[in-house]
Image 1 (tube, rainbow, N blue to C red):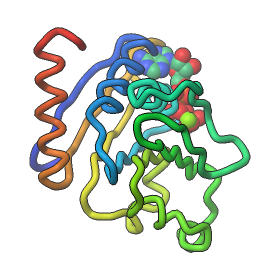
Image 2 (image 1 turned 180 degrees about the horizontal axis):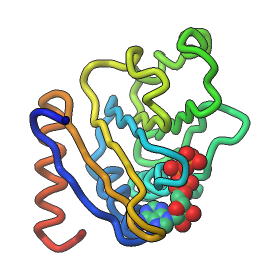
Image 3 (image 1 turned 90 degrees about the horizontal axis):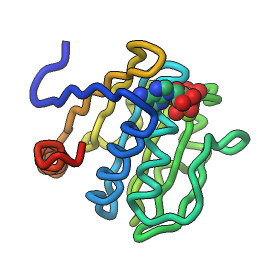
Length: 163
Ligand SMILES: Nc1ncnc2c1ncn2[C@@H]1O[C@H](COP(=O)(O)OP(=O)(O)OP(=O)(O)O)[C@@H](O)[C@H]1O
Ligand SMILES: [Mg+2]
């Protein structure tokens, strides 16, 4: 069971998931880290598409198929990391992914559960799950004060009817 602060949301379409991602992109600050976990087709890339849009990237986000990291240029660089093909945690160190976590961009990691131990302790953890063909659950769990504040802003956006 999750402990502490969290927010549970249900998305009823890919578009809703993208909208949520675009708020996150708008709210993101340099150095922010978003860790996404959840099975195949739960909407992780869809959420990243929204984040890239919210950060003002002209390039639409896709799954980084042969590379583990793809950078979208917007208000801040968005480093889209996909660990689906990761074979072992040591590979993350070899790839120098840590440089991204402590850099000036925003990091979003798909399949973060493959290497949870290597990420900075402060981040926004987002767990996605399949509910039905068009519905997905998203749980946002802030780890650290910065992310608790971000979650408050997300709640505010939703209450303001932007959700
Ligand atoms: N509410 C929803 N939110 C997001 N995607 C949805 C939703 N309903 C249906 N879908 C569909 O589910 C699929 C989600 O695909 P997406 O590539 O975003 O998943 P993923 O979690 O990144 O998968 P993978 O683990 O393969 O990377 C898309 O085909 C999308 O159209
Ligand atoms: Mg994906």
